[in-house]
Length: 484
Image 1: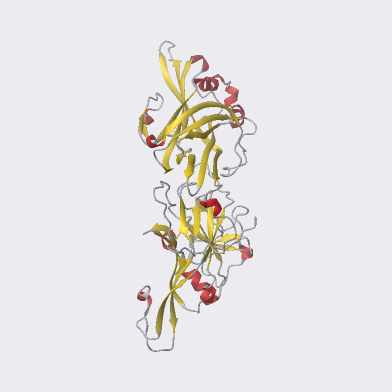
Image 2: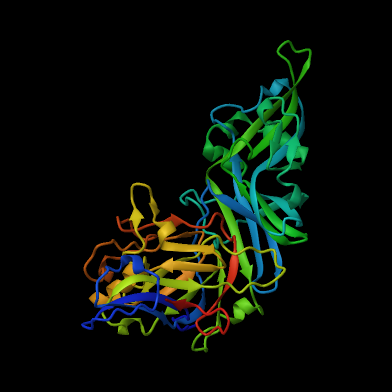
């Protein structure tokens, strides 16, 4: 469907214009510490109207193996609808080339097998109690060896038999759990861990495998593709986040008894498998039909009075500032884009920690960073986030785009349509600082199609799918977005 590509927002610019008059007029105190104590300087405070619009992202974010994975459902967000997240992954022995347990002849019987996951935090209602299906993945198709991290909107893998159904109390995930682990007493009392008991038959199957199954990664994954944890019910009003790469907490642990070396006394033993080899998929889906969020994406209005910003996989708002190119040549003390959230009382679903803005280059069909205000440091793989802005402070999100505005009013550079969104990570194309004119569109290359020194991939919000907010748009009567 063809959509309009503009959005309402307000902008804030402080102008210092040099006149020939000998009288100094101050209409604002902001930036006065920059004004020399001489005549012929006039300072103005100007607020510019913005035009805002809502769009859905075709999100291609990847949740890599070392990143936190979302699990659960928020089913009843009255504004944004439903978001659901499941995890697909595999465990492998610590090493290949040998039988991972004590010798087969020594094993008496498996006691239990426990799946444990490293818990990190929650988005939504921490009192949520949800049920989950744990199923084994079918061997065909399995994980694609060539993919380092599936995209969140990739198709899910095929499921085999369900091996367990469990209920998880999210409020107790951070409690300290004490358990007996004969082979590793260091984690016998651990906080922040989900522990799920799986059928003993799974342990027996792993112990019955011939040594040839454990020869290498290929032979093992042919026999065991992995597991899926998928939400099925309960009080579905939160997402929990787990880290698969922390081998101290995320494990598939087999407890069993075996004959001791003298063959007389039974010993309690434990062998654990860990997650590795990039075999993971965090499948995250939104269902928005009939919600305010979905209705806001319908084209037709000249300027939306609200912007619905949901974190990845989510949405973005566009911001046009049509009068910005008409400003007279001036020295810009500060130009600040200001957005105010419209709070919905009583909801437990937090606003994103951070909102990001970039510019849309319609010629290159690419997003580009805000020239000269967004400054990337290659050595630290970070940028001037504190100065650039985007944090929620005193009930508002603000961004400093003074140098960008200066380039428009002084050098007649392009005034782009801006985008505001709450990415887990972003891949805008970095436009270097210090260029005298518009950075050519021909030099911009998408980060996901080519490697080039001016590309930048940055992590902005702590977790995928974490946070949503409604911002006042350019025509909002009480929380208008503006450029000052």
